[in-house]
Length: 502
Image (tube, rainbow, N blue to C red):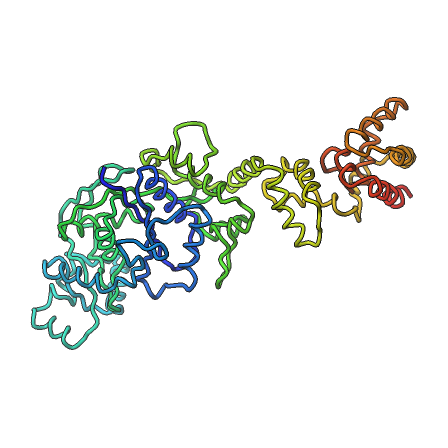
């Protein structure tokens, strides 16, 4: 195989969808698996849809995911510029080549004229297609006499350049994922290659750039599959060997019905973008929601690619080793927000208590709590199995930092008995006398006392948890009181008795 060179070529028209991140990831994995290069090219030929900040957002998203760019705007390379708006002069040269060959023609139809034709076709129950069937009836250099269309050019009349699609030919091409494909040109229109504003469309710029940058494989979303016949024809017109193509399956809604959109995320409460989008209509991102980039990447990799084993947890290094394009499926992959959380849970469990304590400490400091890191290591070790995100540790451990202000009425009805207050007073007296207030120390003494007295363990411990925590949640009680200490434990018993035990 010749040197593998792949590119991710997004348009800076808004935040990068996670489907786009998946495309970038598959390109990156394929390149690294084959000792190739991953190129980032910004396709900003559609200036009308350009959004300020989108380009930087794309780069930051890839960086967060650990997708390392080999060639690009910031990285440089021998095939630049890597921003299409800076390659404008190049495209006109290649458009002229196609004009000289007769594969491209000038079209002077106004947007209003084309819109009227579309409406007329719709009224007749048809779809308007600008192709060999109608091109000779419209205002272009195919239908007009040469002196007339040249006169239009001399007058500076607006025009576009359209590709002259053959009338009735079968186009044969191969896709790595979808196999052999045949399309008849009767179903295709004469696509615009150059716009009236002097900028190329995606089709021309994309083909020229891929050729000049020596792209070996084009791995992109299946939404570009309808463009593949035109792209093959353009390679043929230029006399160039096309790269190998692979069209990736779509990322589907959680119910599997249609492409995943921002609206789905808004409705169901999950992000569809890697990072928070701060401009205009803001949108939340996986990074700010507390996902680890490794978990996010791992989750995305398995949405369309099957490793062929039951393994689900892959580091980036392991993904590169395992990835093969022939194990990418043809059908769309349903996005499961709960599975995304599951992946983050797995990665969180694999982090050390020290790592989690350092992360949780930042969360606490923002809320005015300053706790010794060793104590935090103990705390996260008690609750981490119950959480999927660092921010969730607070929900599982807030009572470690503050005494309850209220007490769960349902738990009181169910767990608080006539003798609960008397038993807790006796327990308080016992705890006050214990010098070793470690979890093991208090548990040994309290259990011996319960056994000696013949008390019901559940009745005592349920009431004890209620006054210390405020409800029935939390880890082992003796771990809790060891962490908050004897003085705080006794205070909470006193407070709980004064409110519940009246």
